[in-house]
Image (cartoon, rainbow, N blue to C red):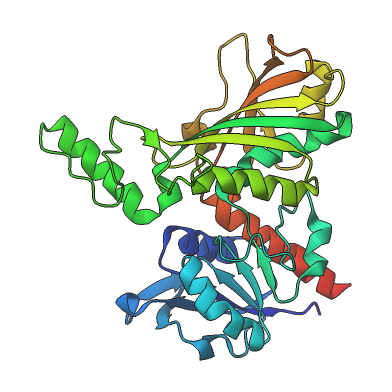
Length: 339
């Protein structure tokens, strides 16, 4: 009989924690038990899981005793506080926050791209930033066609990236705007309904905000290429769920033909082509929502650079951009344990 695993979800009541719970409930995973953890605000709450009503427990350092895998999606500060205790208790931590991503001894993994890095973990495996995952799913397969020189990304990021409360704020602000009532931001620093603004993370002395810096540094780490030139501009848009990104990829030498790029992406796991030029149908957040695959389209030659190509991608931030990627990491880890 294959081994089954005891699993904890830290941040079980959040948007990503809810997706972790759904994935464990609905998909094939060797699960022995699940423990749902959250802050004291959720004490006494119960969540449905496989027909049972499971109580939400307040997360403490002792919450991970007997757990084999701990999915963390409770924010960077909570990960820093509790992940070491989970590791000490014998759990493998799959962390969805930014807390450990750039630590040199912590693997930063997208299973379709660098699954071999999972085996290098010392108790913690980091889930990349959502925008990084969605971009690299489309970019990484192109390395088979030539060395990449430079990547330019512009993101159009949904409210889901800021959590369930931000999604609720977009809905409430939209209702208020259409009813002629005042729009009052609470989660975001500016109105999100019928508006867009630079990603709401601090801008550093280099002019990049934290989200943009994550994309730059994480891409190099995942692709194992410190020489790769990456730049990003990250924008919040009034979309409920699923991020969109415009991507320019420059090759070291002559770019491959777009027909070969389409064929390569078509054959790549986790990618779905949405490039219907005849009918003008390309990736859209509304069609990427609740989908595992990252949608890729608008594939074309860059008219300003003979070595570059352009494409447009959409991916569900909560699924492949967060919970699904972590779930896939857990599956790969479990496969390795069974060998």
